[in-house]
Length: 96
Image (cartoon, rainbow, N blue to C red; front, side, top):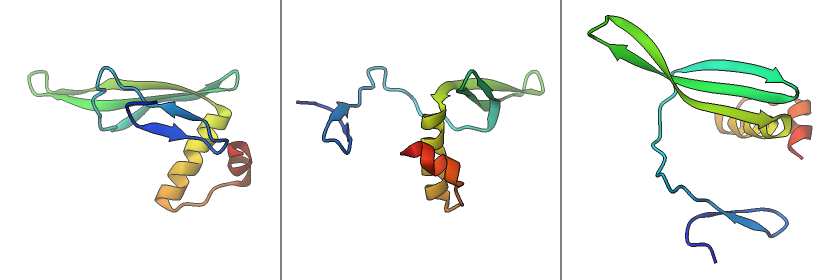
């Protein structure tokens, strides 16, 4: 039996969510990488660092995600539903 939260799948199976390092949430200010390599979506997200001493801005990469096209389509669908935007049929098909 799982001690933490779980994700349940339609087939009845489940997986426990573990976060031993207590990952700190980070706000995303910028997409620093977005490309496809051999069918894998590369998505990197960054957060601005404003350094008053140097007078300039920098971006700290806070996440480097690698997603299969089906996972990217699933994320696209979830975000589209949350934001109320239209989704194209290809993305809907890839989620199934």
